Image 1: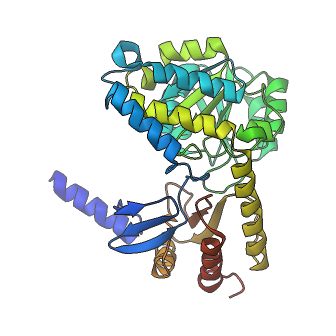
Image 2: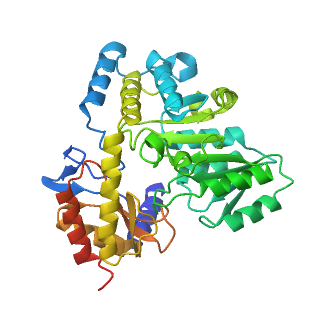
Image 3: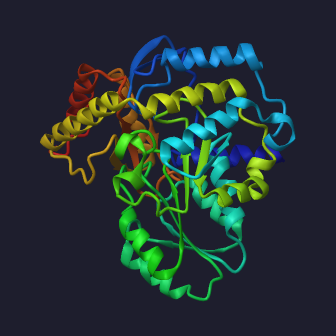
Amino acid sequence: MTEDFFAAALEELEQKGLVREPRVFEACDGGTVTFKGSKYLLFCSNDYLGLSHDKRIADAVKEGVDKYGFGSGGSRLISGTRPPHARLETAIKEYLGADAALSFSSGYGANAGIIPAIAGKGDAILADKLNHASLVDGCRLSRAEFLRYPHLDMAALEKLLAKTSSASKRWIITDGLFSMDGDLAPLDVICGLAKKYDAGVYIDDAHAFGVLGKDGRGSASLCGVEGRIDVTVGTLGKAAGGMGAFVVGGKSTVDYLISKARSFIFSTAMPPAMAEGNLKAVEILAGCADRRKEFLDGVRSFANELKRLNFDLRPESYIIPIIVGDASHAMGVARAFWEKGIFIQAVRPPAVPEGGSRLRLTLSHSQSPRDRGAVLSAIAEIVNPRK
């Protein structure tokens, strides 16, 4: 009976164009992937600065395996903490100019553990409606009053702040750079409202960390509000090219999370060799101004070419949504790109709102100008809005 239930549910998903299938790549070099014997240009990776195949990072991981073995063998508070974890956290806090940092095994786990640790019954969370799923789930787990304002609508946020004046503690929670639309939260306005209404500010800077702001310090740096964010979460699996996540904030904040964030307390620690690789990646991020500039110059050039194709781009971002609307149609458009040797995935609900299915095109330092030219030609042929 159980199998029949899931078979029927799966058929319903199929009819809506919402079935997911992991695709196994035989090879990947950061700029291309090989799938079922065919090679494709890769334009849907979060490896923004092309560090996932950096030899310096790979060598650090190999040395870590030789020194510490494969796994950590336990949670951080039992037996899993090794010197690379401590060195990584020191490097992150120094890079971001924070008082303290704490690493997690994943970005999803970080948000799912931190938010319920800092907010609970009697508190209120005010969150952007397009926040990442991990933020949404962390808010729901917290048991705080959970209110969502329309995307980037600061007037609506202020109304919610005024409405929740009786809450014990209020948190404004937002992505820094939004993962599906490629636009930025107005952190300067958010911080001003937080001060006016005595609220805390929590940002997930997964997609901006390492790329945006001075020396790649993220969206708070770009918006000129460093030092005004109470809790910042970032990931090491995007611009850093590795895996895992971190939180930075005041020392008391981080010390509190060590004792209260359940996803930290009850998760096996990041393998120490991976911590060594992440440490090397953070060191590279802190000193790769030329690479970052070259990448962002390329982003602006690509955006200009898209505008010539009559695309209405709100932000000039390395995350570029090509909105299609219907989920099944989005899958068809993705297949049209695959047929031209370009791998871009369709993003469908619940990752985006109903009717908002899209191709999420992302740029990477690993892509050559010729690669990007091929994508622009494909866009002009497949989805040119002039048609």
